[in-house]
Length: 417
Image 1 (cartoon, rainbow, N blue to C red):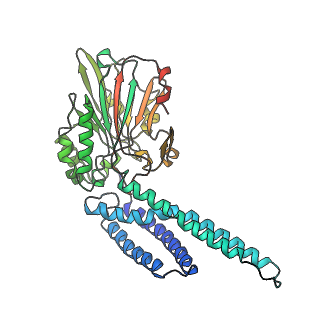
Image 2: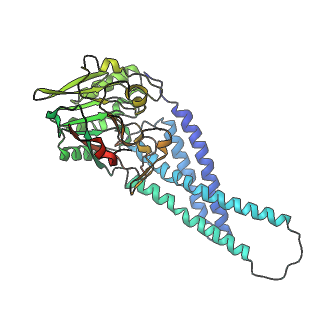
Image 3: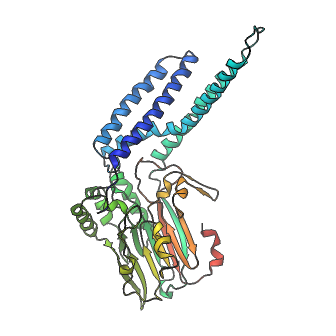
């Protein structure tokens, strides 16, 4: 099994940095309240809340549930995230305000001190205006995080993608595949979010359902949260799946248990193997690799494609999109690869045709459809979360593909990133 991430070390460092930011912002707020002669309880209450949230955070770290969470732990981490994350948005405004005040103070010290005629204290008015503006804008990060946690988090979006594969047999023209990815079962407080995912999939009436990895955060027992709904997934040509990086963050015994659990839910789990999907007398290859990427190397693509004839149309399920450039495009006869892993960054902007997320600075292919020649890659944004239980501007995704055996790529420019 791959080495589990150093959750404790990361959590400690993250906690210290975040709490230092929290103290800095709260101290700035306290100075603002005092300068305006407001009630001291306006800053005392936030300090009390900060103390309570700090204790909750270290309790969550003690339980080692930073990635592996379920039920009550999701609620605790959500509360912590709602308190700390907006401070990251407030911090730049406070730093800029303090920087301006520092420059002004430095300039005042250098000024020759001479008696000045009485005048209106314009600088005081400006400072008051700057302070009021800063703290008024501080509400924006709270609104964004609150919406991402209570509105966008489980606002599942169906993305409909027509995919034209020149080698696709005519019998598969119009074949429908629904993809979900990155379930992270432990990220759900209960079964209801995945029940909604399953309900949406049922309404789409796919010919086949595929799941591209990261079933759990860290432990196989997380599957208990979604097991009943997973077993209800149905499609005429089956529910097929692969594993992701998080599906290896445990002992060999736990890994075997996870595999047995998934297969016991009527899921065809492909671990470096392939299936021939037959419609009439024509076939389509569906291959699946174990995860390679994120310091793991479990994929055996040659093994997965063993026995596949060179001219057979092939769809590959591979969790990590970095596998595309490393081992697929221009190297193997894969027509379409379906991935996940990035979550679309869980934070970003998708409006008026503009797609942006910090994830694009980490992953060359971070969300959506990509094409190189006649080979195509789709990166799904996932239905679950890892880390903070929120999504800001990036909705969880259920992708509905309709395969087409004819059509010119020239007419599809608008579908590609």
